[in-house]
Image 1 (tube, rainbow, N blue to C red):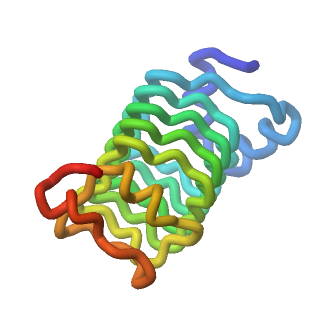
Image 2 (image 1 turned 60 degrees about the horizontal axis):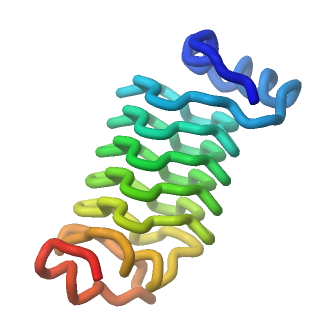
Length: 159
């Protein structure tokens, strides 16, 4: 497991340098409690990263790989997650309110108690009824056409 403050600075250096680093060091990276608000993280390889309780509010994570990432209780409000691969990630209690998740892959993503209020999941891939039933949403949450809005969402809660 690779950890350290220098990793945050390396993230800011751009996708090419970060992804080359990840190819040389494919193991997990420890970025818990990271402050990455408004960060430009598009096209980054963050698969398997530990980002517990991290601030990623309004971050650009479009086209990034977050497969298997542990992002419990992280703040992703208003983030751009279009086309991101978030398969098998743990987003328990994460705040994704207002996030753009169009075309994101969410196969087997753990969304229990995740805040999806106002999020755009209209073209998300791999999303199931079970996943959204365990999350919080509201009338502004945009879901794929094949999924029904959980009844509890009309009251602002989760099933």
